[in-house]
Image (cartoon, rainbow, N blue to C red; front, top):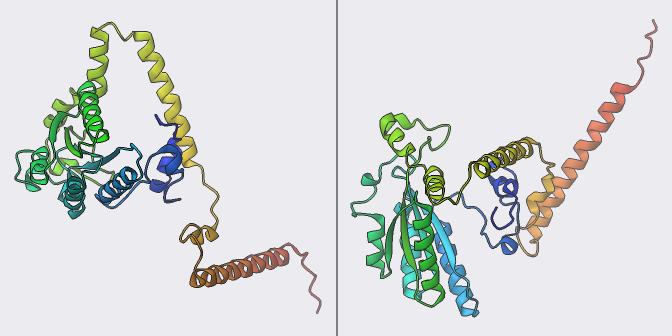
Length: 280
C-alpha cells in the first residue's frame, strides 16, 4: 500500500482468482508465493541480475521462521553470500511457524546465528520495535547497495491469533502467554513512544483509526464481490508464444463452451415457448 498498490490486487491470490492482480515491475513488488521459501532464491537471482546490469536495486526477501527449515532458505543464503548479491533476508520469527515451536526446528541460539555459517552478517532485533526495525534494515540495505553483500535479519515477534481459521492454537501455547505478548503490540508501543515525545495527538489517532475502519470496510466489500471470470484466461500468460498444444487445448475448450452456450440458449427458448393445447 505504501507503494500505491491496491490491497485487493495483492489479495486476489488468496481468493483463488489470479495469481497476482498487479504489475510487479511497476510496483517493484514480486508476486506472492504460496510455497514456503521459494521466493528467497528468486530474490537472489533478481538482485544478482540487477547488479550485473549496473542497477542499484536491493532485494528485500521476507520469510517466516518455518520457512528457514526449507532447503530453499539454505540455497538462497549460500548463493547470495558467494555472489555477494545485494539481498536483505528478513525472517519474521513468531515462534511457532504454523504450529511447531522454534526449538523443534533448530538448535541454533537464534536464526540470526545461522548467518555466520554462510559468511554474512546476522542481526537479531525486536520485531515489535518499529524504530529499531527501521534502523537495522536501513543499515542492511545501505550495506548491500554499497557492495557489501547480503545480511540476515531476524525479527522476533509473536502471532497473537491462530495461524488460520483451521488452526487450534491452544494445542501448543497457553492463553496467559498470548496475553503477555498482547501488551507488546507494536502499534501500541509506537503510539506510546510518539505520545511521550509529543509527536502524536489524540485527534490524529482517532482520525487515523476512523480512516482505517473505512479502508477495511471498503476492502471487505470489494473482496466479497464476485469477479468476472473468463475460462479462456487459463491459456494467457503461460508462454510468451503459445505452443501448438496450448492452442489446441484452447480451441477445444472454446468449442465446448460455445456448444454449451448454444445448448443453454436452445433450452431457454424451449422453456419460453407457449405450451400448445393437447388434442385427443
